[in-house]
Amino acid sequence: MLKKKLIRITTIPLSLEKLLEGQLSFMSRYFEVIAISSDVARLKAYADNEGIRCHPLELTRKITPIKDLLAVWKLYRFLKREQPFIVHTHTPKAGIVGMMAAWLAKVPHRLHTVAGLPLMEATGFKKKLLVYIEKRTYRYATKVFPNSKGLMEYIISEKLVAPSKLYIVGKGSSNGIDTSFFNPVHFGENDRVELKTSLGIPQKDFVFLFVGRIVKDKGIVEMVDAFINLLATHPHSSLLLVGPSEPDLDPLPETTEKTIHSHPKIFSVGFQEDVRPYFAVSHVLVFPSYREGFPNVVMQAGAMGIPCIVSNINGCNEIVTDGLNGLIIPVKNVNALHAAMDALLREGALYGKLVAESRGAIVSRYERHEIWRALLGVYQNLEDS
Image (cartoon, rainbow, N blue to C red; front, side):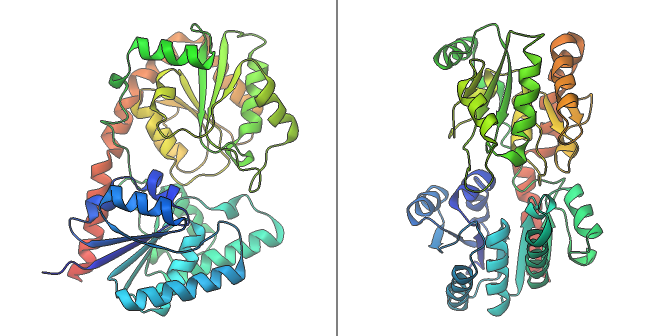
């Protein structure tokens, strides 16, 4: 019996690699899976690794109307040839292009996952434009999957789509966490000593870690300011930053950039393929983002036994329970962030409690294979109907 075709689309292959790692290979047991994204070489490498087909499509993360309409036309022609049963998109640009093309091609099941909304931080004309694009994306979709309760509530409150179109897969998240891979047992004391030495971090320092894009929307400005204040009373502390900068899309203020690159207790290592060693040498993940969908990095930290300080936004405040596996602070609040960092240095009993609960809180709710099976159930229900 021929498998029905399932097409998954993201704007860039990095989203396939990091947000959907392993998932498409799992789905290929039940469907003929085709991955669509930009960057031919990287997309092909991903598809080969997952054992699936791929099809390159030129997409940009910026608003580029002419290129986007051309992408819609090219994708429409591809979908008419392939006749997929499901088209499932992720990320904003892939969402509008993919859902419009799938609607034009009369694909019966058009699914879009929402894993964060840039419009939440936008203002003026840009916000109006992003709201319009989001509404069109949802209109072309037959089902919309917010990957957190907070995102669903926001979408409903802003009247972006009828609630009947919305559905959360499992307990949230787009892909869950491979808790056997993100496990502190893979790293011993010698590993930690060697990495700290190679980075230049003093062995006895208490290490605060950030993993993600080094951009303003992630709360980097507040985090750097809070850390500098903290050093006045806790000089044996370090701040470790892991992730790429995006100066063209969301630049940091020049003063923050200079501090990151010049301060002797701030260590920035750029993008890393494997982030686990950096969790292994750290004590707390600091993630003061302004907006999120369902952040993988917070789940990864928990699975590695690392408590988190997160901002009170959707996704973060679903993964972290304040006082149980981390601390929740107000958004864009340097003083509150400083106080939370200070508390985990001063209060050993509190820190120990958070460490003890961190891994179990993730394993019990966000194991990757459970998320995959929940999504597969959604797909199979479409077949039955």
